[in-house]
Length: 193
Image 1 (cartoon, rainbow, N blue to C red):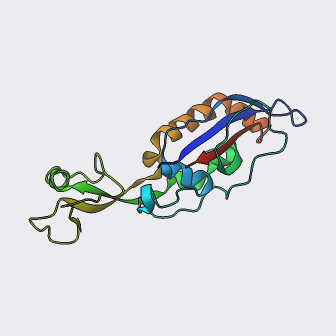
Image 2 (image 1 turned 135 degrees about the horizontal axis):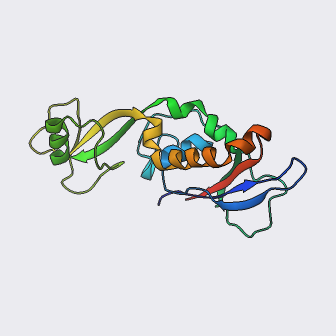
Image 3 (image 1 turned 135 degrees about the vertical axis):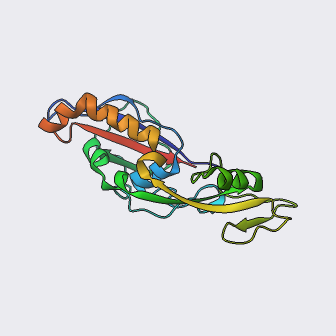
């Protein structure tokens, strides 16, 4: 079973005013984003298979904020948290490289090597079943191998591209507000599994 994020972008107009929900959080299922926001699925995917190196999240889960608007919004069933938008935008981790790992078919591995592809087009956290033989890319690939465990590195911004583009849009649209009130916008979220 996978994990999903549930949450909203909220704003306030003045430091004494309550926050109000203005829209949903960008919610593509991306475990690298979940790890960055709150350490959720930090280094692992389905069934505990390693997907990337562990990272230092922006913050450990903080719980739901007090004074949350009574909008009936579902925030998942665990790891509730909130972050000011400026914390998320300014997180240094977006500029780092991420070391990832996954399993590809022998055919995909051959195409990657032939075409000089570093990041696979498609991969899985893990594979199992009758006749499945997974080998590490550092090993000689035996004739009975069906899959290869590969490792690669790419910028965190690329691994979280959709979310980062959403952040770039929010910064462009609301940057002027964040200059006068750095806490004017926040993300409130939780996860389900």
